[in-house]
Each structure stands twice: as structure tokens, then as C-alpha cells.
Image (tube, rainbow, N blue to C red; front, side, top):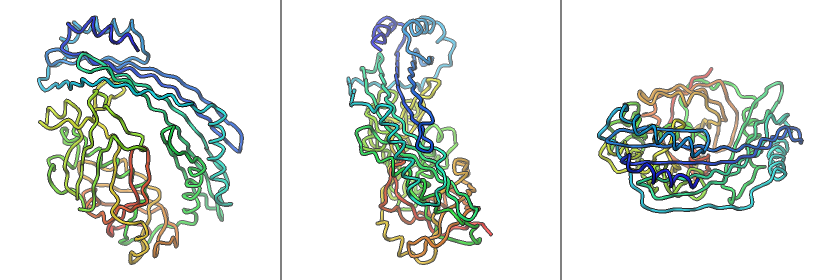
Length: 435
């Protein structure tokens, strides 16, 4: 990675700015089936992504490897090619003078350790309930990703992330009815890791859905479990993406400072969260991370920005630049944190039945412009906080605007789903179609 500085010095006079990102990664995965190793995968990868700027013009370069000769050839050719690219006076190049290095090298797990973790994942599912008949997949993975960002306007920044993951997919059967459950968990290597819990949670979902029948069509209080809620809030984060707002592809376009949700909702983009895996000190443009309040008491406070979108909208850069596979810069969340409002025990006090959604189909297809959605849902019916029956083959239809405003509580059983932190979320009565 050291050659980047040499090439920047060689070509800096030819451009207004040069920005280089290099990455190197290693990963290991062990898959288990019926107590035996089914597959072992070991991979390594590296990548090079470059942007050069001159007189409002930008040229991108990406390579599937880290190679000094290729980068040198690109920078040499780019001196002429960049003149053919469109000019944009709003091109904004964030400056980041802080030098940063944070390379941690704890003892990484070997294949035998990953195998034992995968076995714990499988046994967690099989030991949960005798109705769990098979575990289709149980695995454990380790990833170490190293990133360097540097450039004419960016002081050298070098860091790495080490994470370990477990995944389980299992089948439960009773009276000829077969249901599937799946669960995954990813934590930083130095954090508490409990792979058997991943298996138990997958098995709990599968067994909870056994015997389910379509709900009787009608209005129900809707409770998204934390996993379903995480998918919902991921969709909301896309609506806060300034690029989507600028393209008029978001319900939140033109809504800054206005009420867009129930006043119980407080949503923050938090890159400093100690456990969620989207944490960072600098975004992919080298801009220093900052916490951004997106929704406070239902009011939309901010969009998520990179340098370019902040210039276009005359807004503060929220340091949410993410680099796509093509090397271009987009916008993305760090960690989306939803503040709890009520103790989870309060679910037992709700009058009437509560439909708890454990699995949802079609949420990613919700229209973020019109807000319309139609979701296939399955889960359990709660009465006084206790599961009394299961359901499936039911449909929840509505509009994201109405769903946001219908939020009544975010419960304290907070879980981390990758980079989204939320508990179960209760919504006011909505129509569910079934039998």
C-alpha cells in the first residue's frame, strides 16, 4: 500500500486533487452439516479505487487488485482522458487533514475454532425443540478487512475491521407441516459471541410458525419483531439518502423540518456505536465521522450526505460517503439506532390481540416514492403478551407514511441486526387480509 504516496507526489501537479482508496481482506468460513464439516472456504481479496479531479471534472478508476503499474498507467492516461468527462461546478472535494492509524491484530480464530463455533450453532438449533428435524445450514465466518484512504487533500488514514459471524437455517415439522427459521449474527472479534444463540433463535422462529393459518381479515395491532423492524428502518434510511431525495425517489423529498412520523420515533445515524458493525471514524471520502439525528420526535431533521450532495443542497456534510463497486461515491448509513420508548413488559397490557410479525416478504419492494406496500407476513398472535396461535399466508397492505405515523412504541428488547439497532416496534391497528 505504500506506493500510493509516491504516485500522488508524481501526479499531483496534473490534477486539482487525487483520492486513492486501497483495501485488502481475508476471510474464512466453515459450514457444518449433521455434526461434520461440509465445507471450508478461505479467501483473500484486494481492491483499488481512485478519483481524480480537475476543473470540475471527475474520472474514476477501479481495479480488482492492488497494483502500482496499473495505477501509474491510469494516472498517466487520465491527464488527457479527464478532459472528455462532463464538467460540474458543484463537484466538492472534502478536505481531511487528520492522520489516522488504527490497526488491531488480536489472535484471529483458526479453522478449528470456527468449526467448533459452527457446531455450537447447529446444536443450538437441534437442542431447542424435538420438532426441529434438520439444520439446512450452520456456519461460522471470520473477516479481516484493511482499508487505506489517502490523497492530495486527505491525510493518510489506515484502519481495519475484524468480525466474526454465525448463521443458521433450520426446518421444524409437526403433523406434516414444515416451517423454516433462519438467523444470523455478526460481532466485532473482541466482543461477546454466542453462536448457540443464533441456532436457538432460528429454531424458535421455525417452531413458532408451525400450525399457522391465515388470519381472519380485519384490523389488528401490529408488532414487528426487532428483525422485521430492522428491515423496515433500513428502508427508511434509504428515504433519508440525499441522492434519493435529489432524484425525487424518496417520500422525504421536501420534508426537511416537517413531521414525517409518530412523535415517539427518534432515529439517529451513529458511527460511534460500540457494537453495531457499521461504526467508523472516517467515511469513504476520508471525512471525519459525526452523529446525525435523522428523526427526532417524528420530525425529519437531516438527510444523509456525502461531499457532493451536501454542496448541491447547501447542507452540512454528514460524512456518509460510501464507495460503490464502480469506485463512485454514494451515500449510506453507518449505524441506524432507534431509541426505545417503553419496557417490553408493556406488551402484556395491550387490550385485544396483537399480531407479532416474525417473517415478512416484499418489504424491499415497497415504493419509496408513493409509499405503497403489500407485505406477506407470518408470525404469532399474542394475547396479554403470550403467544396463543401462529399465522401465515396473510397480507399487510398500506402506505409507509401511515405506518410511520402509526408507531406507538419501540420496546426495550433492543437487538443489533448488523448496523441497525432496534427493539420490537408496535404500530396502531392496521388491516390484515387473510381468510
